Image (cartoon, rainbow, N blue to C red; front, top):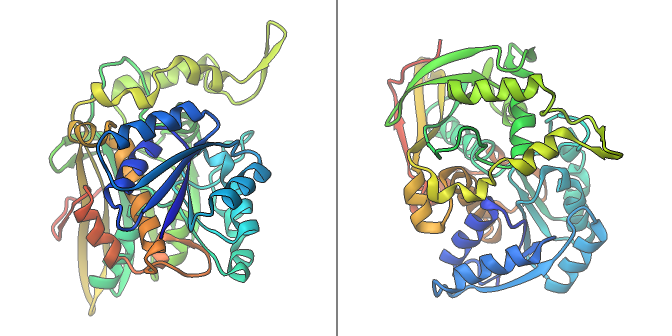
Length: 401
């Protein structure tokens, strides 16, 4: 019998819960845990109304408190903890998994609350401890990071002897009708976008100003979009795990309206994570902004359009140059009809469920701390097609200049 503990009750957690219940032959029991147990109970009610076979329970837990997480794990006794809480809580949950010898999976790398810094060093430091404990930690198993790493392992396994360049392109052509809103946690989203950008080239990372580099790309099924170079954590692991890699870039699309709103908010200090004194209380402007922006979980019924996330590779196979583009197109309205969420949560939640399935079924069971591209991509790629994120490929892609 497989039990999974799902920590978090936001939009991504909702998708994970639905998808686990759709695969009850693997996920026979799940527990949804969060600081706000009413959100967990609401998710439980949603899936139980659909008549799935998976047994669902709920619990209250403060994921900032390792001892609370340990107590919950010892009480529920899961085989894996699926962490879809906040990136700030990755280390406390990993500590709890070590203490209880339970496998771990997350969708985003750890970042400290007081610094907008995105890197794997804190979690990679756990490699030896997880290996000695005989348990598996899978890092960054959303879409990007996540599926982009699986795509890379698949490309290397089937089409390349060496990959030389990789461009990761993340496009959202959805329209939610608000003048300004973020598609996932506003605090995490805005920290990511306003941080300096970077790209990997010739063995080292090069930093850019935030949103300094812009390109235009004609995406299959959604058309021409403005996209901006960002720093993204999967570049760090892919730079280590792709033999022969010379250059990696990550681009994400934003509309002119979104960029204008963001620059205004940044200029007036609302994106700052430095505490300020307001009427005798210490507040963080970005956390206040998060409180007044639309909740991403509420965007599902409003959002129309599609996303396109994929990877373009160049390299060699048998001495010949190869170009390869693999991507997924996801429809916001179809996601909402299926699981009650928009496509951004869907494209993160489905891979998290698949990754947990890979661990529980032994396909990705390997002691230590690992990024997704370190595992066999084939069973994961098959499940993407089966579980709602079918992928397409091209050997004649338009290249990014």
